Image 1: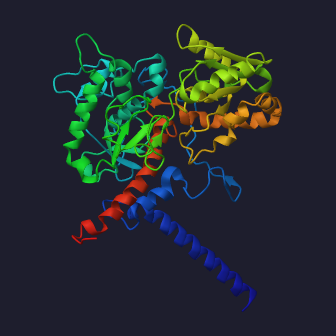
Image 2: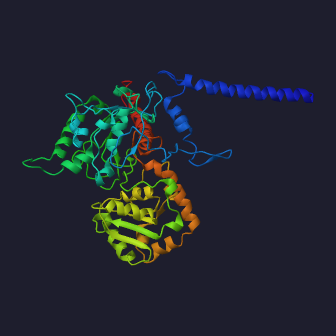
Length: 488
């Protein structure tokens, strides 16, 4: 064959290859249109979630290109006019009229939400709608009740997720299409129970006046009665239900009866393993209470005069007893700020200033393994030093915390000199690498309404979606013979 023929053959081969590639690319929308699909929806999600592949490790390189797992969030542009002014929240924006709503068939997660009476959710915040009105108008942000401020905010996950689901049904709110509310429970991937359990505990767990049973317990009893009467619950024993119980004492009376559901929790510290575990439940970040440090204004190594910072309750019970032992070890160390403090007065402002001007921030186990202090440190870009052997972390299946945190076993931390030698021995370059990574991941721990791509709300929905895959796998296996009428 002549050289010219070989050249023409190669050109023809490349043209055919490129043509086939573009043909496949243009066919993807058709393959996923309507209710039928040539590619299973679950597989399609794995391929296209966030325009990346879940099979690629975050940060890996393909032909020299770094593959991010999540969409980055620009904190400089996350404050836009038209959002809801909740304590400590960022303000989002609204979708212009005429734009399309999220397509449930293309959403990462289809969610059916019970229309529980307001006393289970926004009524607990003092909201009173019109007659027969179940939900506030999420488009008119002035009518959305604010969540209680102070330390109440740290367990406010149910508030943000419920608002996000309500917003998914309107054209006027800009938000990611990770989770979309559907009207038919049989079309849902998960069934959401909108009970504000943390608010119920914080505000209504104590007896008032002549009450013999607290409002908190009454609501839990009624919730159990409601769910047990529903076909949706009885179909799979609640395994496809989602309940948020982030405060460690929330849902205390009902958790055993509702233990088949998927929980969104802060940790597993006060749960037996048969009720809550990593196999079925999701760990969500606390909402931090200190001020968010803007990335461009974050102080570098040389402008953080304090080496190690801790401010909080020192004398704790259970696993938190280590705090007082560390206090006596570290209180006289140079460049260490280790003091008692609360959220009262200017406590939060003091913590904000202290963390943002410190190189390292201690996160020590309290009454339970987790603490809001970790997320305060992340928001302050202060490298967290985690001393909590039983701690489970949010989104750890997709985030490598060792890139921006330091983990120390409790037994080592209590050895005299161990912790200070470790921190003083860290070179500036290594600290700076962790600090830079902190600034990259910090937006994943911010709660917003409306939600933003890759923020805490979006990340929680993604984590729930990853859990539902395993839940549905087990349910489908159990249905192999049940629907065929064949005995096992």
